[in-house]
Length: 212
Length: 212
DNA sequence: TGTTAAACGGAGGCTGCCTCCGTATCTTCG
DNA sequence: CGAAGATACGGAGGCAGCCTCCGTTTAACA
Image 1 (cartoon, rainbow over the protein chains, first blue to last red):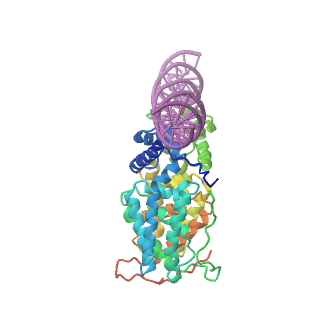
Image 2 (image 1 turned 45 degrees about the vertical axis):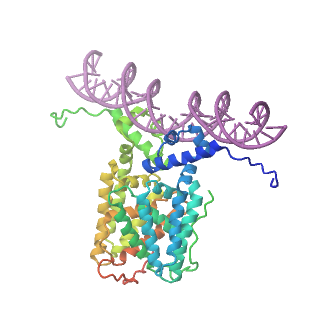
Image 3 (image 1 turned 90 degrees about the vertical axis):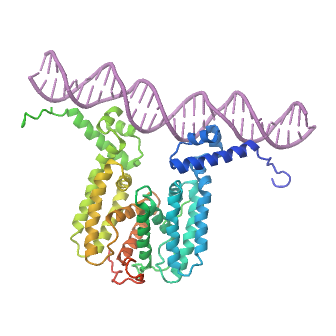
């Protein structure tokens, strides 16, 4: 199947073009109307039939994923940079704060995060892994420095972060979220209760490994 | 007959009966299928027409409110009881943990909380006030005892709590939520950054004195 | 028992989801 | 270039849930 048996024909030009159009339209529609927006509206805005939309993105989530992959990646990269900060706890705090800003900016981001945090979606596989790793590196460094309890997994933190941003359409949500995050990070400095107990692993395994 | 100036006719028996039936059915359906469940399914289960359902509860939220008012109240009463515990911080912790259990039990509870936390719904007015007061009393007592930072409002905490329960359909969510709550409560013991920049790197109180 | 206000129930209009397939268009190859 | 075949297009249509409207039924009261 390799060889010259390269079955792949050149992709049709219109297909490529339409895919792009749908993506562009989806970005606009999702950011404006939230993730609940009608897919038919997206198709219309893109100037394609609903069938075309579904061919390129078989599910709502597939489309969502395509739109928000980049955003998630950006958030993840920020963690990479912060890894070099001197104070590891502060680095973590800063990342979380940036996350809040991120959510504030992109209207659809919250939904994207929801998919990342929940399981079963297309975005899950990608973002969850990405963000988990991002947080993980920050968390690990702080834990290694002994400045932070080590039994909170990156997944845990991701969920907590998500939760604190959840009310993102309430008036003062941003200030609230920042305050809550501060409390949480402070809490992370306190040693876990089970001293004598199983203090084994640095990072606890998540309760269960989803496989979608 | 007590008061004949009371022009109001006695309410029709079938109306009363049907209302009750719908409520009962809604409780079952919502707890089983979440808040997204079809109202038509509720009507069918109740053995009434869809029109009857809508007459009694003009909106989905109205129905929801009727169903979850009691639950919210129960949660709120628990706080009342816990107010008498000796350790105020521990009381707060216990309330939050009970909340997790609550959400675990009633599948629709999460949605009810969402409405409480978000604004604009019918449930909001009632639950938000109720739960806020419940948390407030616990929080206040702990703050008064000097065991907890005092700049976190009941609303903040309610939202944080909600957030940590958000992923309630993930496999290990319950354990996760409990862990996150612990971290958060620990964080609450740390004095706020306000005063001197000096943020207590260590807990001042014998924080890790938990039983359970 | 008759009158009448109130409640019943479900048909029907609407919107959104998604599938299916006849038609249109593009790529490839002679 | 032009035909052949592969691929993509688009929207009709089936389904489900939301909610309204109104002709019919029924309970309360006299």
